[in-house]
Amino acid sequence: MLKDDGDIIRGVGYVAIYGAYTEEAIEDLLRMLHPVTPFTEKEQRWPISRQIKHAIEIVKTTRFETQEDLLRILDACLRAFEWRNEIIHGRIYGGADRSDDLKSGRPGVPDRKVESAELYELANWFSDLSGEVARPTIFKIPRFLATYKKPD
Image (cartoon, rainbow, N blue to C red; front, side, top):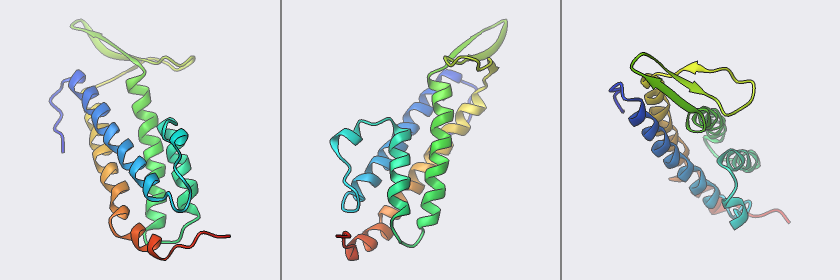
């Protein structure tokens, strides 16, 4: 678990890095599920939110132990990446004489204060999520795929 050291810039870096690890876990899941639904080169270039929604659709068509847990985890991934996008695509302004403010690039979204604790919380969430996405790919999904027959 990452410890909050009060450094906003380092926190943003951890969010980017651990978010990327979670993206990799989702892409690995989609590659593993290729026998059920192909994960094409075009789909590999989709934004991560679209890849997650695609993974949810595929997982819903399968039947394996912990399937419901994986669907819950993928839904959490959607929320985490939305939060990440708010941070990464926003603009953080600050200085010695004022708080650090996050300004959204999206119209109508108000500015808000950002603190390092929020960034470390998100980075740690991503760390947990990447492991949770990967866990069923070790035993549960391979067992399902060993007996899977594509419908005609």
